[in-house]
Amino acid sequence: MGQVLHGNATTTVAIRRTTQHSQASLRALSKCYGINQKTVAKSREQTSVADQPTGPKDLRSTVMPLEDEAVVVAFRRHTLLAGRLPLRAPDDDTAPDPLVTAPMPAAPRHQPIAGG
View 1 (cartoon, one colour):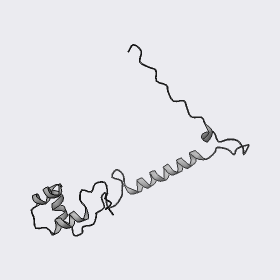
View 2 (cartoon, rainbow, N blue to C red; view 1 turned 90 degrees about the vertical axis):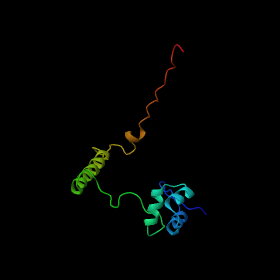
View 3 (tube, one colour; view 1 turned 180 degrees about the vertical axis):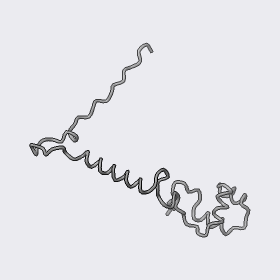
View 4 (spheres, rainbow, N blue to C red; view 1 turned 120 degrees about the vertical axis):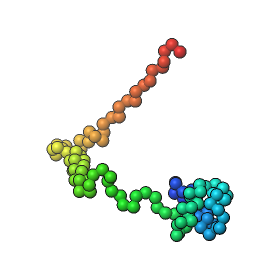
């Protein structure tokens, strides 16, 4: 059964284990496995051979403070929900919803280039 790696992984658990326990030089190991010398050096520094998660440790906005972001999110939720509510109760329960039953606009037709 093969090992499932994330999209940015350049080494497997077996390669990391081998590079951690090998006495060979960084250059020799990088040539042997076809990876960068920095990758070999980083794998030697790691205490575990397991895949490490990538990305930020804590998700937060880099633009605005957390309190301001919460206000914006609350406003967006409020306006999205308010836009979906009907302005008045429908007179007839069998009336179709105009947003759901609106016909799709016709795709534009391209004209052939004249004088070819």
